[in-house]
Amino acid sequence: MVVKSLVEYPDSLLREVSTKVDVFDSDLQVLINDLIDTMLAEDSMGLAAPQIGELKRVFVLNKKRIAGDKNQKYQSEDILCVVNPEINFQENPIDSSEGCLSFPGRREIVKRFSSIEIQALNQQNQSFKLSGDGMLSILIQHEIDHLNGILFIDKK
Ligand SMILES: [Zn+2]
Image 1 (cartoon, rainbow, N blue to C red):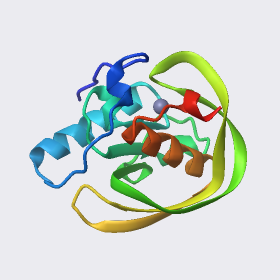
Image 2 (tube, rainbow, N blue to C red):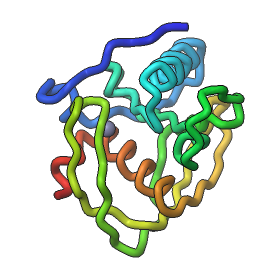
Image 3 (cartoon, helix red, strand yellow):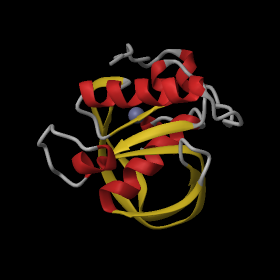
């Protein structure tokens, strides 16, 4: 288990655009494991690779936490790994109250969409589609923004 230290605002790394993953090797698996370990250690709903200093288009989500379940026993199927995400569509604007591990203690009301559908790859380079509503949709948008150097304070 490797818990990485978090990159915090105003570190300029958070403003970089991450590069696409094109090699699905053991280095990628290590990055994904580090993301998962760090997300769980922080009891966070999601974490993007730039937040642990890796400018790769990868993020992880904890579906159980997103669904509001605070029981900290997680199965592997509770964790979602998303590589090279592309937004197919997003709709229904909403206001979202958010925090971010890179901004300790700060919360803001930001503009999001309540529904989203993305196309992405999993850690085995297999394509999948993911639709989300409510909190899941918001988390997906928040994490994709991190891959583009966009932070939640930009969406006020
Ligand atoms: Zn964040």
